[in-house]
Length: 393
Ligand SMILES: Cc1ncc(COP(=O)(O)O)c(C=O)c1O
Image 1 (tube, rainbow, N blue to C red):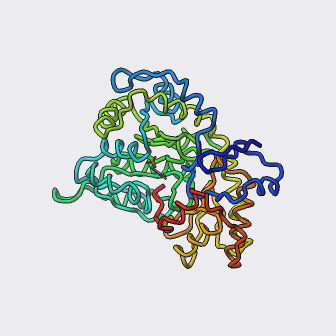
Image 2 (cartoon, rainbow, N blue to C red):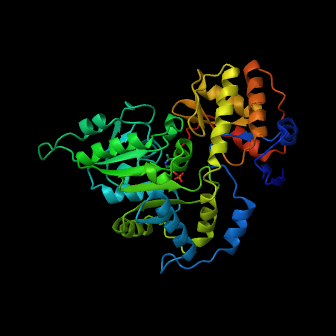
Image 3 (cartoon, rainbow, N blue to C red):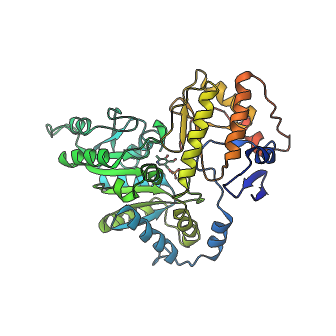
């Protein structure tokens, strides 16, 4: 195991830790950061690839590394073409702007990121009237019947036109819940039957594919556009990709520029994205650790359901107080859907999970042996923030 110190953080480079107790001691007083799978640091290999990336001017006439990334992601998603974007929020917004006319209604499962965590850009910038659908087909999932009913029949001229269904797989606010291919296909068929376009927010589509043991393209069937993230779980410092038809990508390039997302020597960022794609299979480790974390929480009396992917959501009586006590004990968590969210990611080892559970046990009994050193800038910044700040990621 290689341990590196960087800006007050302990970086554990090797994932396999044979002796959790030894590694746990090595963690010392470092907080275990389970707020999000976006807190990962680029690997040394990524940093080297970024430094060496072949680049062009992507706004002018293309960047070879970004192009390689886009072509590879389009292939993985079964799409004709794809476009790199600086963030998932921008990728979703570009898709919604291309699908919606001002005043069109769009459907999305309750708690969808496009509804609750993108500053209302779907309405503000894409002009859509949001219509949240209840999860009547399981956590994070809507049924074909619900889509048909919500789409309705065309009404008199003064009624809303419903033109888009926006799906999310995995569904973040439902604890990383997965929609399997058959359910995805049935819902898409219902949308198509109701003349709706379909956008899939696949920020964590990789996690869904790994959890189900299917290729990502099996989960995009019938969608007009798909957004996937490279900076969640896969460890890239930045970047998402939005995919669809050749015509869509042509328009998406214009919209990206309009939104300020044209990055000239983008290959420097794309190089990290290419290496991130090599890390999809290792998401299985994050899922395994999330299950171990949930099991340990249950043993300690927490109501932690079995996670399907890398998100553990736990209902607690006192959200703010619990988050504060966790932080004080050296475990960083976030608030999501009124619950405590703990996420596993590629910068964690078994030792981090063991240490987190040990500290959480201490939270429960009201004792804590965790005494952060005053020089620990990371923890200071955590404790000085409002602890129950809702997570948008
Ligand atoms: C489901 C989902 N969609 C979209 C996004 C937005 O991604 P970004 O933070 O890159 O804008 C997130 C962020 O976590 C997400 O969880």
